[in-house]
Image 1 (cartoon, rainbow, N blue to C red):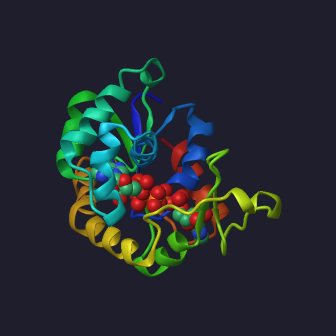
Image 2: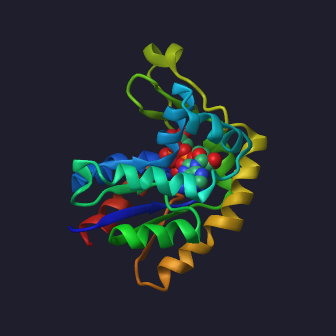
Length: 207
Ligand code: AP5
């Protein structure tokens, strides 16, 4: 399939979890702005220093910073046939900028109510060696790797509430923006990880 796919949804909806499956099905590389920003924060780059305060408080990094990051990423050779965006775009100006640089073929929207989000995010643990995502309640890690798992700094109950507020104010309107362009494919994100994965798979194979 030509063009890029956008994985859309609130924080903790399961975008990162389901991205692996879409990458396997389509061969498109995953481009996660959250992962790119966290790498910049860890490396202590100028971008990372600027982004850290926004991320730790659950606010969005300014559009011009994110758009510059994406323009650079799309110039890499593996992006020629489109990519899988995870966590981008998050505002209408980001979506407008994206539309001017590449073709978006579909937007898969993982829909989860706020009530389910807090437990998912507060229970999330990441494996820094493999990038795998676990959850202490919903996807427990194997005991032998528990010692090396990390918790994201913005995965606290207080920050999650800010992230949800930011999502509803600035990102959710993008759903209707893409819907009016005939690109939005809603997927129920409330089942188990496997059930949501099956729904995402059937959305992708029907593209
Ligand atoms: P980012 O890293 O993009 O965070 P996010 O959008 O808040 O999304 P998450 O990574 O928290 O959740 P996810 O949907 O990937 O869920 P996951 O699969 O891990 O952004 C972080 C920050 O960077 C932002 O706040 C902002 O400051 C900045 N930023 C990034 N992009 C930006 C942009 N474009 N513009 C401006 N600023 C930007 O799953 C979550 C947990 O739930 C896991 O533990 C998982 O195991 C579990 N889980 C998954 N599916 C299920 C299920 N079906 N049932 C039960 N548990 C499940």
